[in-house]
Image (cartoon, rainbow, N blue to C red; front, side, top):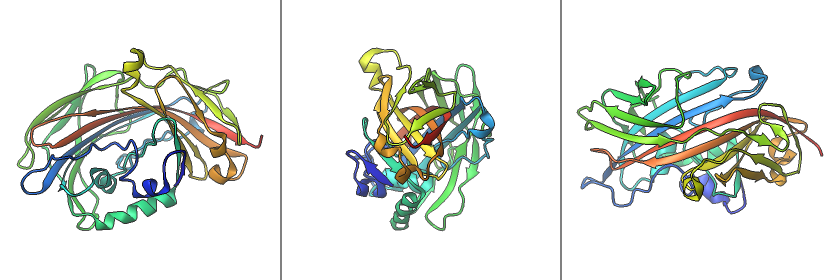
Length: 325
């Protein structure tokens, strides 16, 4: 993982020190036994805009998606809910990475490079973690005005003595996830966790996305070493509304490296040309996927949960070809 701009290499590899990671700060939210209960809910929807859907994969951020997604489908959705009991001394961000995939986001106006090798280095720090228990919350349901979705409880894959218990997911990768919309999450409770209900508002997904002069639905032609201007429709609501959400853009080459840049939701951002080159994306010409995400992180409180957060991640994807200038 190679940083760009203000993000340091040590921050990226440690994962826990990243600016803009999704998990909230624990602070003093711990009980007398030295443990906290952290609730993490992820709602993800990725829409494939490519006019050649069969060759433009749709990707979601969280590695815990349990259902195989059809990469040629026009959209892929995923809901994931985890209620973790862990030591109050444990970094919540590092704990989330051990249970799934930590959300890594640079500060607005800066970029980073994500690579499989760096993810392996970050994962090596999990060996020092204390055990994490994934709590049974009973029957968990997510609903909107147009959708009611019971989530499926699944046993977490065996990771030795580090992580054990159950987590909750949507039952397939084609569920209807409207946006913008108000989402309500409810549980029946269990012997491990009290009954709860909380809600969070999802933003609209990115619209009217263009890269340079091209619509994202078309094959985007990028020149290596030249900055790429990306434009989208900013959310209405003035400056106060724009500060609620983040936009991040992933350019993922066929060789596996991803350039990720984050921006305020102003309707325009530039991916530096210094990151669109063979040293990052591999030999040229290179095929790549361009994904524009709007993400919103909403804290919640519920009985028995010390730290709670819902993160919405709504994206549109297209294809690009990167060639020498």
